[in-house]
Amino acid sequence: MTLAFDLLLALALLWSAWRTLAAPRLDRAIVLFIAFGLLMALAWARLAAPDIGLAEAAIGAGLTGALLLDAYGVLQRRRDRP
Amino acid sequence: MTSGLLFALVGAALFALGVAGVVLIDHLLRRILAFNLMGSGAFLVLVGLAQRNGVPDPVPQAMVLTGIVVAVAATALALALTRKLHALTGRLDLPEDADD
Amino acid sequence: MKRFAVICSALLFVGSLAAAMLELAPAAIDLRGPVAAHLAASGVSHPVTAVLLNYRGYDTLLEIAVLLLALLAILAVVGEPGAARPAPAHPVLQTLARLATPLMIVVAVYLLWAGAFRPGGAFQAGAVLAAAGVLLHLAGLLPGWQTPRLRLRLGLAGGFALFLAVAGGLLAQGTLLQYPPALAGGLILLIESGLTLSLALTLAGLFLFLSRDEVAP
Image (cartoon, rainbow over all chains, first blue to last red; front, side, top):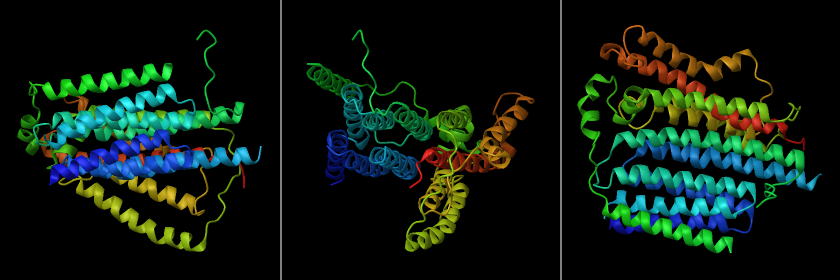
C-alpha cells in the first residue's frame, strides 16, 4: 500500500517536472513548478524528514514561486508597455 | 524497495532532466526552473540514498535543509540578473558564442 | 542533432546511475550512532537541530553568510530605487492579509521554540515570517524596500554577527563553535532567534528589493 503511494508520488514528481520544462506557456510552467514543490514536500514527509518538508513547502514552493511569478509579471508588463 | 531508494532513483532522473533543460532551453526563466529541478534532484539523492535501508539519517537531512535556503538565494540572484539583462538589452536569452 | 545527443547522454547518465545505486553496498561510515550518542550533550533533543546548530554549526554559519552575500549582490544589481508603490489590492485580500499576519508570527515563534525538541527551527520560522512580509507586500500594505537604512542593515547582518560573535567567544576557550554542554541549550536558542530574524529579513528582502525596479502601474 505504501509502496503504491510512493510509486504514484514518484510518477507525479517526474510528470510535473517534465511538464514544467515542456509547458508551452511560461505562466503555466511556473504554476506547475509550484505544484512540483508541494509534491516534493510530500516526498520529504515520506522520507521521514518533516523538517525539510516544512522548509520545502514554505521556501521551495512558496517563496521561490512568488519570486518567479513576480519576475514573470514584471517582464510581461515591460513587454506590454515598452 | 524502500522509499529512500525509490526517491533516490527519482532524484537521479530529476537531476538529468534538469541538466538537459539547462543545456537545451534558451529562455532564461525556464533555465532557472530547470536549475531548480536539478537542485531538487540532488537533494533527493542525498537524503534518499543515505536512507536506503529505511532508517532516517539526520546528517544529510540537515545538509539538505541548508541547501534549500541557499538554492532560493541563488534563484533570487539569477532572477535579479535576468531582470537586469532584460532591462538593459530587452532579451531573455544569452547570446551564443561566436566561435561555437 | 544537439537535442538528440543531450537526451541520449541524459538517459545514459540516469541508467548508469540507477544501476550503481541498486548495486551500492551499505555505507562504510554511519553517523546515526554518533549523533544519537551525543544528543544529550548537544543542548537540544531534536537530532536535525543538533546537527544544524551544534555538530555542523559551520554549515549554518557559512550559510547565513552566503545568504547575506546573495542579498548584497542583488542590491548591487537591481536598478535605481524608484518610487514604485504596489497598487492597493482588493479590500478582501487586504483584510485577509491583516488577519493572517499575526497568526503567521505566532506560527513562526512556535516553530522556533519547537525546533529544540521536534521538527521546526530557525529556517522554517524565518521562512514563515518572510512569507508574511511577501503577503503584506502583495496585498499593497507594505511598500517595496528602498536603500536599506541603519535599522534594516542591523537586522539583516545581525544574525550572522551574533553567530560569529558566539563562535569567536567560544574560540577563546578552545574550539570554534564547541559549546560547553551546560550552556549549549541557551546559546543555541539565542543563535536561532538571531538567525530567524535575519533569515526572515533576508528572504523577504530578496523579494522586496527585487520589486523596487518595478514599473509603476
